[in-house]
Structures are given as C-alpha cells and as structure tokens.
Image (cartoon, rainbow, N blue to C red; front, top):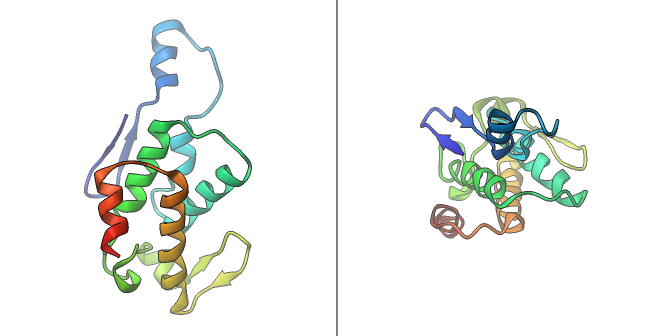
Length: 138
C-alpha cells in the first residue's frame, strides 16, 4: 500500500514484505513501486517508468497506480508549464536530464517535463479518477 502525505513522503508496504512477515524471506526482489518513485525528482521518476516500460518489465497494477498517482500529484503546482506537471525546485533550478541523455536547463525543460509526464501517465494506463483529472486539467 502506498499512502501519500502532502509533503510527498511515501510509505510503501509491498505484498512482498507482507509475505516475508508471514512466511519468511521468499524473494529478494525489490518492490517495483519503490524503484519507480524518486521522491525528490519528477524527471527521475518519469525516467524510471520509461526504462521499465522500454525494457518490458512487468509493473504490477498496484505499482502502476501508485506511481501514476504520484506523478498526477505534481499537476498544476508552481513551476508547471501551462498547468501540466511541475518538477521539483531543484529540477527547476538545475534543469533535467532527458531519458535520451541530453541535459536541458532552459525554460523548455518545464515544457518537456510536462509533456513527458503526460506520456508516462498514458503508458501506465491507470484507470483512476485522480489521474484522469490531472490529464484532463492540462
């Protein structure tokens, strides 16, 4: 379960952890959600989603929903381009590195990050009211 607080701190309790509590360690896999969400970086989170999808990694429905809601929570915040999805202050100041490796630190970084967030949300294909609302608001 992923619970979101307004300060963007997340508590992740995966099914794997619960299984280990009940039956002892059965796997060394990391929770996919914990790997995808980078609490201090929208661009790193989007890159993690892109990497998982591009490599054909199976993302559980609960992990897809958690990361999609996390991305959606950035919609319309200060620094967002045209009411899309805002990077964190550090990303706005230092710029971002694109999935393809280019470093962008101009004003266009906000636009690119907003568009990439939209694309990631569409690829995650989560049927959730908060995610639909965030995509429709832009």
